[in-house]
Image: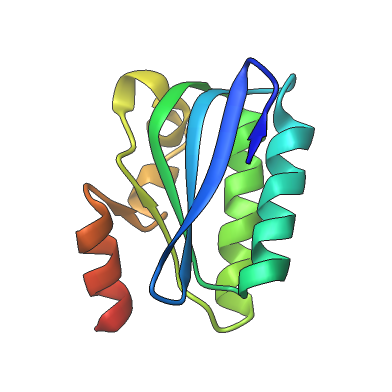
Amino acid sequence: MSNNGLLSLRTTMAGAIVVVHVDGILDATTREQFSDFLDAAAEDHGPDMILDLGGVTFMDSRALGLIVHHWQRSTGAGGHFALVSVQYPTSKVMWVTGLSQRLPLFDTLDEALAAFAA
């Protein structure tokens, strides 16, 4: 678990897949914390990763770039990657950049897990 007052990060497991729960602000002030946490989760649990962004209150383009980096890293290593519970009002940058059409977005954790199993 990682919490600096602006951003809280924790992991749970869905079988062998790590789920990173993100609560708070994803911007320049929390980028390093977010990056370090994702790196550690991937190192500890392998390339399959789901980011639960339901608790995100704001996301900037730097955070989105970091998410894209981990998506590419995960799939490049033969893993699965998904984002769940993404909310438009707090993550508009995904739609403005067009990445909402490319990133694997799912409404629920169960939907993401079903896609991994397919």
